[in-house]
Amino acid sequence: MRPVERSDKMKMVHSDIRGPIYQRALEMERQGIEVLKLNTGNPGNFGFGMPASVRAALLENLDRAVAYCDPGGMPEAREALRAYHAAQGLEDITAEDIFIGNGVSEMAQMVCMSVLSAGDELLMPMPSYSLWSNGAYLAGAKPVFYTCDEKADWYPDVEDMARKITPRTKAILLINPNNPTGQVYAPALVEQVIGLARRHGLLLIADEIYDRLILDDMPFRSVGALAPDMPVVTLNGLSKSHIVCGFRCGWAAVSGPRKLTEQLRQCLMSLSALRLCGNVLTQLVLPAAMADPDSTRAMLVPGGRIYEQRAAALRALDQLDCISYVKTHASFYIFPKIADRVPITDDRRFALDLLEEKHILLVPGSGFDWPTPDHFRLVLLPEPEQIYRAILDIGDFLERYHQ
Ligand SMILES: Cc1ncc(COP(=O)(O)O)c(C=O)c1O
Image (cartoon, rainbow, N blue to C red; front, side, top):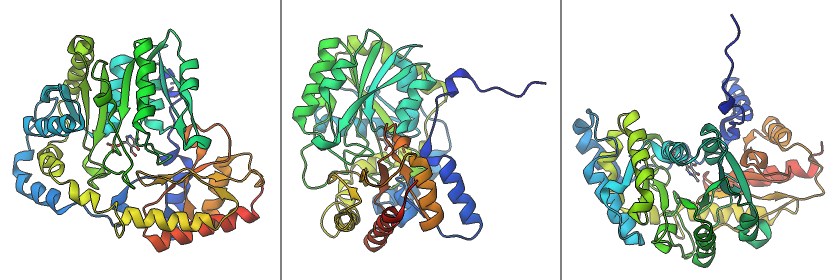
């Protein structure tokens, strides 16, 4: 018998966040070596706990969670999300325009399957969280990367975006606030992207999972709120804002003129039905979670963990001249640049060597489809003192490192 061959669709799929370097870290742990794992944005691994409101709702609803629910989601949960998005300015959506699934990850695959045919192109940011490029590959389509410009606070370069539109372009993806850059885009920039999509008749996909994790009172507007005349699908979820990554709870909200989104909504419904339903327990806690923005906010202000960890990270980065960075204003990631004088030609090798010597696991820039071997993503989730020391350790390593 011949060995089982992978499908063509899988050939380009990659996930460096949980790839070979991560496997090596696990092996080191099995050998008894303690590794500081800064590869995933998984707050539950760093002593963050779920809000009391979520815990109470969970316990209260346990017995209601055993049956399948409607494929698109439970009515109370969909209604809570409708109200959330209406308050953000997506005024015309109904609860049935929201599809709840097992994380934004699942909903992103459904969106890609729904709108991309073989050979179609999805415009997406670079650096890029790999969920979306993989989603495009799995749909047989092609991710086309527009540059986010480090010299312009990592804002998307709208001219680059415009140049890359072809007759095969189906949609523009905006991840705002962004992973891995930690930036929030000003509403004026979002308007420019919407204008481009409008001129070319493109669907807008807005991954806004970090919209509740904005620091420094930076202004944020949801794409759908600024584009009521356009088909928009907005993705969001509880994983990060409510420290429940493991619950797998995300959703897609379809907005814009209904006649323009009929097929998209039908496809999301069919795909939802194919996997029967999303996790019911998490849908039962959704109304309580959405009614509790305060637990999330408390992490983002002085004295809160996310705020103080970022401050400690920036204090450490400021001491290093082998690394430069753009100050972040959202999420808990940063995408620093390694100075040109550090001779690195292979950033995966760098990440592996760092792991072996300093027992720190991070994701090299190439894991975010970044084209040059001079960036990496740091997850700023350890307590302030620990992230501070880890960054100084990375600096110490880089000062002596060459390939
Ligand atoms: C931009 C972005 N979108 C989606 C996800 C996936 O989230 P979920 O846990 O809801 O699948 C992540 C997770 O890190 C992310 O950073």
